[in-house]
Length: 99
Image (tube, rainbow, N blue to C red; front, side, top):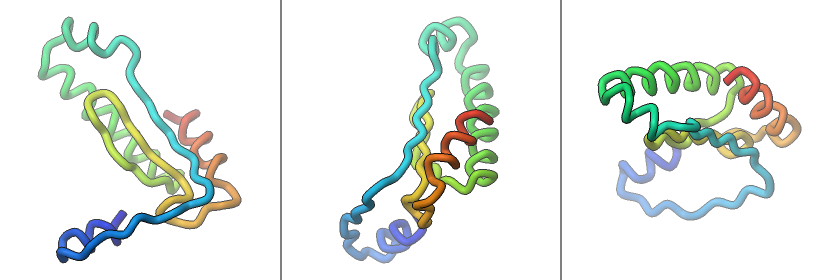
């Protein structure tokens, strides 16, 4: 989140935050190791770039926060950066359907 990045950039200590309830989206590509062995690194990178660019567009559409991409894993969350306590699960469910 921006306020965390700003604090780190300014050398300030970042205190832990507590949230009673959030909804998390996590994806992992089934067979990724096999796929990456068969198609080569450039095609893997292009495939992931296209996929995660589409996911990034969906995070904006559904107003959820992208946490991280690591390899073939994608992590996003609702009701963490913005208060969305009444519809965070729905946001992530609709994101998941679109994804």
